[in-house]
Length: 293
Picture 1: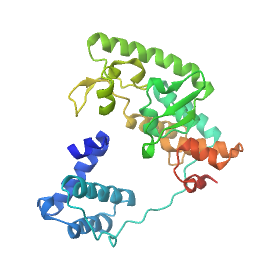
Picture 2: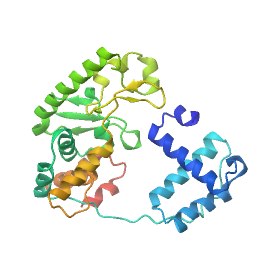
Picture 3: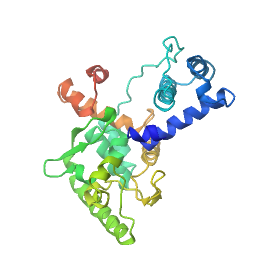
Picture 4: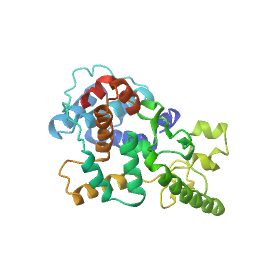
């Protein structure tokens, strides 16, 4: 996994790539990957598409993992994969909630999950962008939030809903109390990128680097072995949103991303131009944003 960590990939990507490498090896009778090549990779990918009927995104994820394995780890670049049978990616319309549905949804939520869901709707952030927010990225003077290392590794600025400002400040007071208590116990560090940690060795102990939405419990970092307080797991919010949707009687197929879709739709309904919406959503290509028109 050294090759992954040298490129500063997330622990999530590390685990996903490792899992695909093991599945590939098992598919070929536990033969070492260095004895396999493009033909065996194509057979595995076609098995996923034809027999397992995986989604296009899952098949592409497997391909990316195996290309990384051969190119970066084994240094045996693959070739001749252009004719791989690929699962077709279905183009789906975004699930958008009306303002009434959003109110009904949020009325069924409470606590930190309600705060996070409201923030998703009011800022257009992705689920993981919200989960990974750091205290120093909240600008209460200008009512802005800086999204760091979003999709594609890009930073951008999104609005902080004025109606949430007071609730966010109260939430951060509670978070600060938890941080202070952790510091007293000697577990007040937080994860920061390795290169940044070398340059600023004390940054991991500073309040500004801590997560806005910290976990309710401490956990052991699988890479460093240190006990830390990570951010809230994203699955908790996903489940809370879906549960609230059922209780609100909303029949649409809800997810946290529906709040982001609804944010974009509200902007366009209120006369914002497509380029502004593109920038706020962090889309690399305006054609992605055009799905809301």
